[in-house]
Length: 197
Image 1: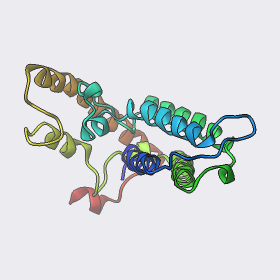
Image 2: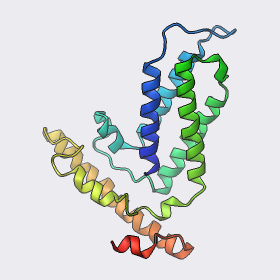
Image 3: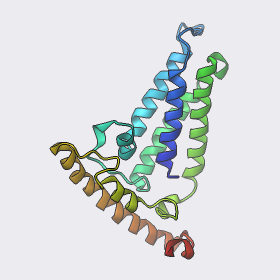
Image 4: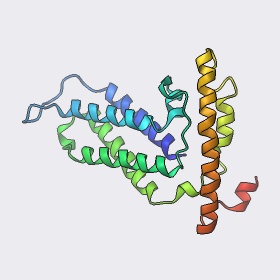
């Protein structure tokens, strides 16, 4: 599963955990509520990360980014994503997990696991293999614009948004080709049998 989709899944679980949180929380000595602080951190992280996953935003009914298509395997996107993850992982480390209620400990654990997984993912040159037998962004884009997929086609703006999204898609194709050529030179490729099928 692509990193952005794993991230969105993890964040969705996190937000679900937050919504189940108890209203009665214990404050720290400084008078600040650690549960509320974690809620704010998770919400802020979700918002920043969502901007790098416009199709993910569309999938949860958030239309702010319906005019965008972003390739998660583009170097610029990976650098931004890594910077966001590092920023919020640093903030998460400042929390004393023991000071959180049970629901927020789940949120903490989901975020920590997501950040740990992302940190490991950044060490592997996955941007050099943007396609595999399970994930093909080109097929996904066709489904997105099929008229019965995630992207809405009810208004003139919906159609204009999709036309704009096509620009991002064409840039993504060019990026994928360049990344795969770089992968060939570096010896980082999918097995031939997988790509032929």
